[in-house]
Image 1 (cartoon, helix red, strand yellow):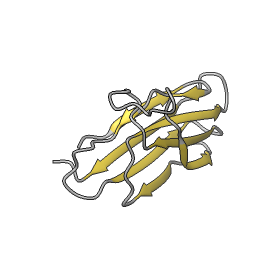
Image 2: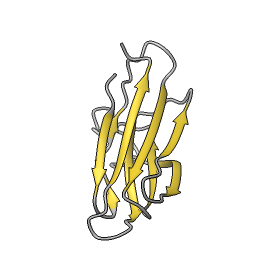
Image 3: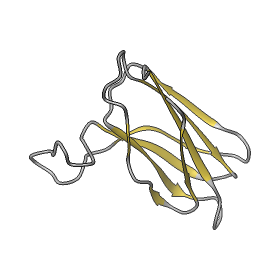
Amino acid sequence: MQPIYVTMTSSGSSPFKLGNWNAMSVMQFGFQVNSTGGSNFQIDATLEDPTLSYPNPNSSTPTTFTLATASSTAATPFVVGISSIAIAAWRLTVNTPSSAGAKVTLIALQSGVG
């Protein structure tokens, strides 16, 4: 699978990005976050379908949990490898950008997809 890039320049959450549910082996994800410096961010995930094709009977919005949280320093990538975990989708949440217009880029790669 090709890497997926999500870039944010202000606080908030990106739209969800779906994992490939048809992986032929155990789902494995790798995430790298690059920042222009000093931003506080987290990587959220959900086991529910954010497209609502398979809706949760109890809620209209997916419940998220945090895979990783960090604060970056200039030009230092934050890397987290998530192994053997099944998730439906993930997103980037920027809690505090370092300054107005500071870039935070999440790069995600899922293995097991041919």
